[in-house]
Length: 376
Image (tube, rainbow, N blue to C red):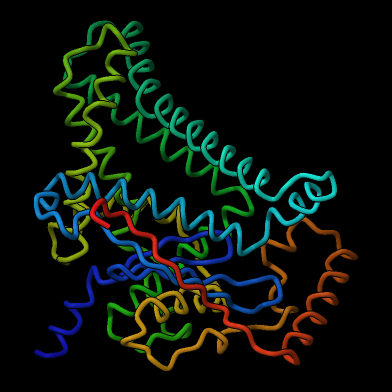
């Protein structure tokens, strides 16, 4: 009885996100990003994320809490991606060039922020075109070929077209080498959470045995939103003006997000025939967005979980999951290098790592607080 209670209490306790060469885990307000560096060591970044719902009970109303939760998860996601980029030092070469040209580091950061905003706007614009305008446009083209189609059937066809576009998009993206590696970390995130929720000892060996499919995944959330979108589309009478129809769908998107959030939370808390049936399409999609990870990737996900829950794992240190440089050649930092460049980089990293062992130890954990709270 106690064991059942303990396991049920673990559901929905922790969630995460995969990034390039790392995994972020969030438990309550505690956020932890664990990443594998090129030299095989593990760097851990801890922070806090306080929801605006914490001190405002009215914002915890069903549907509304889902809308707020979605917005906050997007904010946290972008912050996590930004931190992971900094850890990997992807912009290091650009900063060196800027200094050589006499530019200030501040200008470089401003340019990076501008590029981030532009990429977000481009991504949002592409999503609106692909998933709101294009399905309606193609459905209208089909109607011109076949003759008048019932309004509800048209909405169903539009929804199916949207799902096909979504699946095709994910399949194309999954062919990219770097994205495929992120999908492996996505699988590591799910497997480590499944291992924790099952009550097994949290080790790479045990996590490897667990499923990489999770009902509370963002992929499942997107798929649930697409299905809900079919039914909300049936309630929109406008078909003659594709742009107006897309605008109406955009306006009711928060409602769709809120309903989708409630379902995902329900599916995460309960495991029964009903939730398994409704979760099935999203879990099928995870066959594309998650890949089988290796033990080194599972170790990173476990580092993130244990570091996010120090009260449960007080003696844990990320150093125990460090690996040799030679075991880390699949790392993002090596993928674009030629053979001789890889050998040169390995020698350099080994020398740096050896030098760091002989020097005074410095903390690898940074503490900061990211609060999304109007009262604070």
